[in-house]
Amino acid sequence: MRTTARTALVATAVLLSACGSGGVDLDAALLTADDFPDGVELLPVDALELTGTIQSMAQLLENVTYEPADCQDDPADPLRRHDIESEGMAAVSGDDVFVQAVYTGASVDDITAIEDYYQRCREVTVSGEMAGQPVDLTIKTQVTGGPPVDADHVIALDSTTSAAGAPDTLDHVVYLIDGSEGMFVAVTPESTTFDLDELTVKALEKLRAARD
Image (cartoon, rainbow, N blue to C red; front, side, top):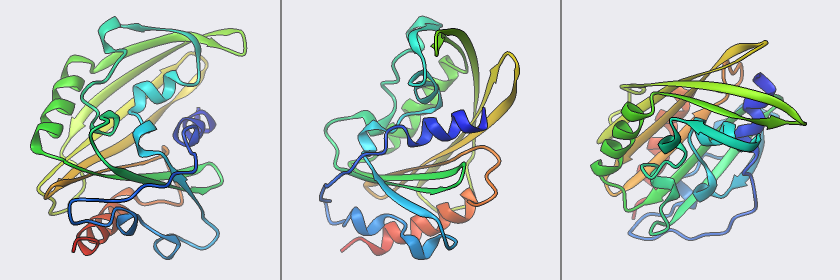
């Protein structure tokens, strides 16, 4: 499941060119090699294709069904809106992956919508096939307060994924809003390379420095 989680985080990594607007240089708001240990590989990612844990795990399966069925789509995820500009990156070290995305046009409504979605979809079973074999994944998500940063609004999602014959894995995802920009950061479970709280603090500092 650890390798599966890594695959879910990097499955959407593609070359991306985009420009920021609204008084912030989104590219400058992303963490760089200087922010990570030596030997970490950096990749650009399409922020619009980054998804929450439920949708990320579902991408690994074929013939997917959801229970509850109305949890299949996550309209609350601000990164899936097409009226924003965004930039994203991934840092990879072995099986450890950290991802970051920044976007424009954020508001407290984003945080409220995320909380509402995961109150309704706090436990979801995703069923499908992998390599021709049936797979059932149960994802339980709890909304928490997030890391100790002084952004305007912060929440974190602790998601535990369970599957028969495999140990449970924990994903920790953070959404934060500062001014009119939003950010998403996430890390693979039990990462020995990336400290999510420390990197979130650095990422917020970068975001503020990137404003005009």
